[in-house]
Image 1 (cartoon, rainbow, N blue to C red):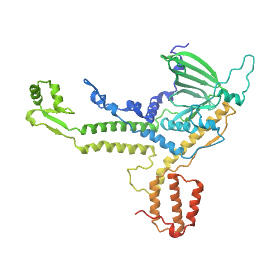
Image 2: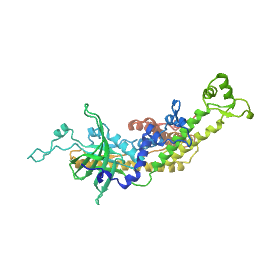
Image 3: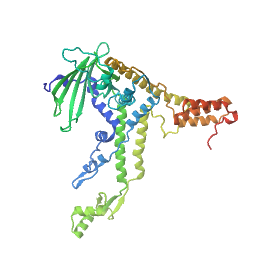
Image 4: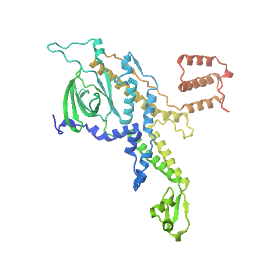
Length: 487
């Protein structure tokens, strides 16, 4: 047993320690929901408890905190990148069909796993893939270890599986002079509810991975700083079976800005939502002596009199000399546009920062072909870089899998490297304008072929059908090859 001064429990890489809070915040932003709202919704200065939490002396109602909602732009950005990167099917010839369908031994396909890796790299800059297999059986006493047949392995469930690790879960690591991992430390909570007659346990586990094996440190659930038991384990190769995807760095990551802007939009939406609630109720103004008159006439308390006359909102009380008449005041409705306009502006800035906002639908500015091509260079470069990174990460994981189990079906992943991030609506409008020009027969046929490419992106056309259509276009007469402009 070890006490809470055990240095193995306190280790944290300098990069991990400096980035941990932001890593968790960025992941919360992608996940969205109430957890992110609770973390990033800000209370206004001098905001009352009733407005914020709904708690008052008379009871509890829903406050602004519980009414807040999130439009998750961060998740949309991650999904959009994945949509482009995986728009072309990843080629994996000779991959084991069972591994392809369940790479994690938890039902997650290899494509789903790599999408998760891509999402985390977008949000956090890096993540890890762990490669593992079932523990090898201990050799019988006085008998040397022997190789097992494929049938024995399949019967025991022994096979390679990959595990995704969030960067917050890999707390420390060290690469040797050869560029390979010397050791690595992971931290997780293991939920165990296997035995129905015992209470479920969510136990902290810190695992030290070394070349050829390692140690599991099971911590006490009620005292996470103390070790309950230690378990040594071996693996079937002299390696640390982890692959790094991306590049750890203590520097800020561009997604930090995405999260900050999303937090500001969350708060603006919440405040605007409250303003809408408040604006539908006129503000009542009463003479100051009205409460006294009602109190005396009805023999009720001042609070009851106020409740009687105020309706759904607190009135403003003014002296009789000011006016002497009850009336309502209303906020100017043109002021309600300020926050929505600011929300729209920040949303545009957000997608401009990302570079993938693929055209802003609110803009109708006509751009030259050169300008559009220039705008597409940055997204295409980012997407190609991501595809290469995922391919290299998967390839390294395959190599480690072969080292742990030489019967693992080796394959070479090939991700698509060409991406078309142009706007289909704009492309079709451009073709329509070109169709109005007096072009030769060959030029008009090329326009029609380009239109088929756009149709292919919209609905999908197989290569055989596309070839037939192109042959029919080539066979058409000049008079019938014109694109008829819309009325």
